[in-house]
Image (cartoon, rainbow, N blue to C red):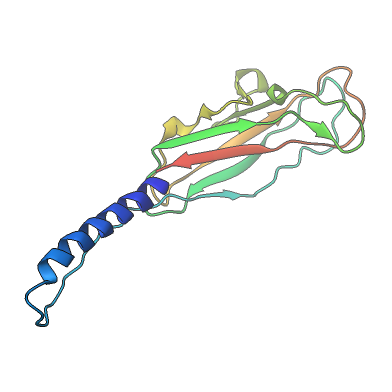
Length: 161
């Protein structure tokens, strides 16, 4: 988006410089034609925007939870990535790793899914057409020794276009 705005600014600035030279015709009125092109934008929408795994025990793996990822924009994505943070509790200082959350596009068994990381990883081949969508499946496995508490995790899905 920043690149698009910078391009528009440069195009408009170039047009103004050019039009200033053209418009000077000795003081008489002149018509000035301006034009620009605005590229498409991509915009991700998640439905639902949160996933609830419910009450789980140590050494237990959750059932499949999903969200639909949709490009609600007018241009396809050129990159599509996912990353997460460690699970953190509301009341205890103990966390458990981001990698206990696994994801994929097919709802495979936990061991066949990709471990979520704190660094961005491509999903859906990086490309999602405008108005296109896919389902992202998540599963969670609670490690042995995790303190009983309510935990939360933030997952970020980013796109470029």
